[in-house]
Image 1 (cartoon, rainbow, N blue to C red):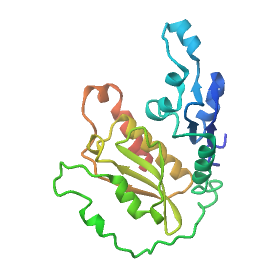
Image 2: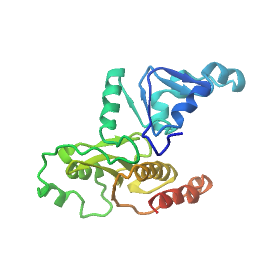
Image 3: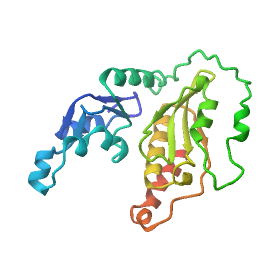
Image 4: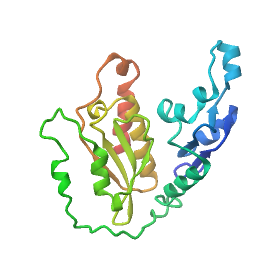
Length: 236
């Protein structure tokens, strides 16, 4: 397999069922088209026969399900044309393989520019949330940010920006969601992204504003210790 050697992207533009779903699952990024693409190991008819559950193809394996619940997909788009354009945009951030550097693009931002709005971005009251994406957009060249898994585990943000034309991976806590606390889903999401960047020698910029890990029996029973360790190991 070419995992970690060549960036691999799957674009699901129709039904993908049975054993066929494992091919895209082994790639680095999966994108889907809303209302026309589906991914599931067993379809609605089989599910109804075996478990007596009544579920539609969209509910079982549609773009919304896989971007918001399962995290199988990294993004969803309205139509095929938009999907192809956005995948092409992602490719522009990535190197061709792990022996090459990411592409360098022309930039028009003044590196020494001063963003006065950042002085007031973080509220004086520590209990007042703020949008970390605003900071990311201010830092990025031309405010260009390609977010990955935007609909899943929104308490952490992952994606790509450019600094002086160079690709940089971004990992950031999002105080607007769960006060930026880490949990099982956000740990898995961020760890996978960090490992991808590490494989292709993409530098990582981390914005940290985190109270800690989310407490509760649900997190402990779900293995937050193990999943939290994945994030620590990825950075190590």
